[in-house]
Length: 320
Ligand SMILES: NC(=O)c1ccc[n+]([C@@H]2O[C@H](COP(=O)([O-])OP(=O)(O)OC[C@H]3O[C@@H](n4cnc5c(N)ncnc54)[C@H](OP(=O)(O)O)[C@@H]3O)[C@@H](O)[C@H]2O)c1
Image (cartoon, rainbow, N blue to C red; front, side, top):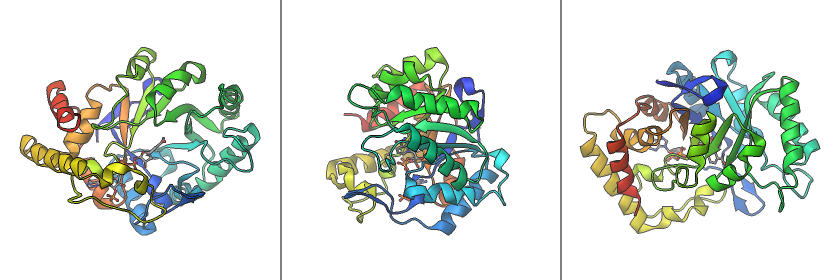
């Protein structure tokens, strides 16, 4: 697996890194589905071990994933996988506790301690602010930054990250947070990373970047033949494209085209969808959700860059 330097952290991580949102299983937040159905602890544990064996050394989780279940699953692996081999990232911000806003300092400190406990580690390599909802006027931001900087001084975290689904929101706050790594949403269908100006900011400031949901939660692979629904507790019920026949067809057509175009590659679809995101990203990686050893094996076959021309061709299949 090719390694990339995660910006000015100077840490070498796998170009295809591991996302573990699904390891939290089905989950609700109020009446909203926020988890993943179909989770299996045994398969997920085997996937972690396989990832380590194949050099996928950057694992991403969050306090919110299964209300700590994903972090705990990772914390239980250190008897088999040496902790020092893994660059471990987690996030806080979606779990609110008894407060009426995100990022209450006292609760943030509580969540950091809980993540350390769940992950069975003395230090979190990278801790993200999970989203950019810092209050109407951004009034909770300064206190949130202070908590993270203090945790860094105390040796509880090594690097600070900033994430959001909206690249513009990351850009709005990045100059104040000064994150060493950002985590934006990016895939070949939904891509405001470059157009928002965030890419330029990343390049200018040598910031590490980890793109999340690079397969649009599996949809882009073209493996769905028909509009699909998911059970309650699976956040994919909130993604309308899974029920849209036109989008399903576009993904199937894209699959067919890439199978032909990259026919000599062992994983033509993943190569097209993932490596095209890396072609303009010298300081970054993709965070791919891998739920089983088979999905890790497939992921381990990609992670190399591709020509700009091929990357443009792949994007043209998905963007209208
Ligand atoms: N910062 C944030 O706000 C944020 C938000 C979302 C995600 N993330 C991070 O990014 C990670 C990845 O995002 P994601 O989980 O939303 O989606 P993703 O990486 O776009 O898709 C992952 C899903 O695709 C399917 N898949 C994986 N490999 C496959 C293969 N070889 N062939 C066919 N299907 C395959 C699996 O689901 P099935 O097997 O069920 O099809 C897997 O769970 C998360 O785990 C999390 O760490 C962060």
